[in-house]
Image (cartoon, rainbow over all chains, first blue to last red):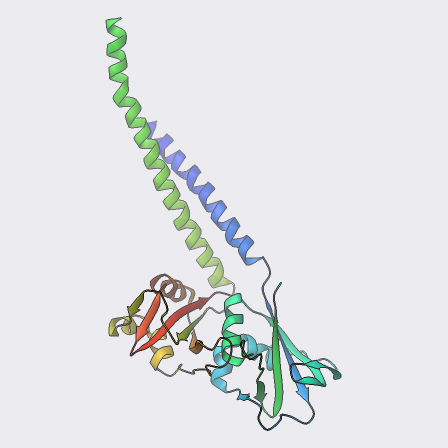
Length: 138
Length: 140
């Protein structure tokens, strides 16, 4: 009788802890994630002294979100229009966007800019086209 | 009166035993619950089709943090870490992007289990051949 009660209590508390932990893990996961937005620009690009990052296959492999936005499942180009870019007013269009984690966002910024101090945004080049990205935080 | 006292002293060990049993039950239950939740979340994540990544960030200065040296044993135990820091996944970005005192050294795909192990093992600043590294794991 005592042993049964003991097992009962163990199971009850275990269930409560399990539900609680799983619930908070779910809440955390569904709290919304930052969005990576990639834009393509065209025109007289880029100026001579500009910093250009040429994307390699390794870059795409290591940053799956960037891969999916530029040439993967999340590629969804919009129409060209004249608008504000980090380099001035230029012809631009959205290329794709992908959800990223906060950490991935940090890693993307550390890898492909902008320079937080100088506020300098590099040109990202792939296959002859130039891109830049922004990350939106929910 | 005498009998009452005897009864009381006989009951005391029994009460103590019940309290200890309850405490034990509580500890076992909480541990069991946490373990189950951990296993369930890992299972759900593995089935979700997302891809966990391991990134290694290099820091220019160690700052105030405690530094733990990386050994050959670390690289043997975690081939992903080896590949990113000194193998084929090394692909360092320029220091100037983002914050200038750090840069991304590389990254690679890992399993959820590996990601969890890396996250739990390398939670401090690591040092290898004079450079300082932070291990980052991301779960989609």
